[in-house]
Amino acid sequence: MKTFNVKDLNALEKRYRIALVNSVAGFKSANLIGTKSAAGAENLAIFSSLIHLGSDPALVGFITRPSKVARHTYQNIIETGVFTVSHVTASLRESAHQTSARYDAGISEFEACNISQEYLNDFPAPFVRESPVRLACTLEDDIHIPANDTRMIVGRIQSVYIKDGFLHADGYLDLAAAGVVAISSLDGYHTVSEPVRYAYAKPDKPIKRLPYV
Ligand SMILES: Cc1cc2nc3c(=O)[nH]c(=O)nc-3n(C[C@H](O)[C@H](O)[C@H](O)COP(=O)(O)O)c2cc1C
Image (tube, rainbow, N blue to C red; front, side):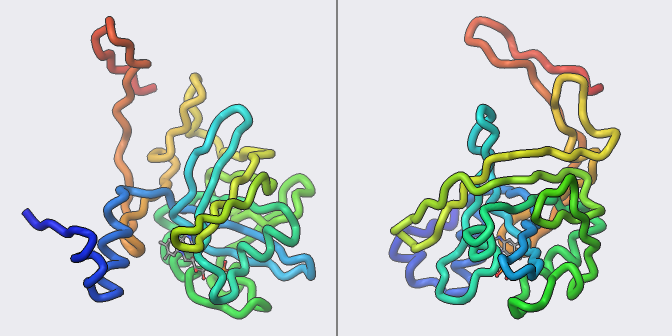
């Protein structure tokens, strides 16, 4: 068994450490975050740190890296208070990955990476047209994490847009059927197979598999 203690992790070559430590938290979500600066420059970037924070109110959060270099997504969210989330599918993944390149602020990744954009219901930030699951969010909180100078952006979900055919009768959203991919480390993209679902677990009840409908 390979073991890394804190000293070993600190001694690793930088790229190797990034790849390893980015892997150990497990599979992550693949999302494109769309923003627009106060001056009107559109921006799109891939983020794998988006997580569910709560359902009532409906909140998501994601981590943005330290602002040692310009972080356009972060700046735009602070300027405008809004952002969109568009889930990445297998057909979007190549161009989605390309959005991680450091483009100048004046360059829209929608154009540079050939991704079509769309505005929905007067929401002021752009969505990815082809994405099957999309969220409109307003900035709820901006939390500094002193340990590594990152920030958690908390977003309040204002609208959810789901293309037809993936939403089950009980509210379960079938991301696999929608073709949404998962990410491992910083460059592994996975297509996902059909889920096995279980009923709400109770101490005195046997585990029960739900029908896949
Ligand atoms: C698979 C993948 C996941 C990423 N996830 C994050 C993330 O969660 N947080 C972050 O700050 N950057 C993340 N990045 C890096 C950003 O995509 C990259 O810094 C991008 O240039 C940010 O663009 P912006 O300056 O326009 O916001 C990720 C990159 C890749 C390839």
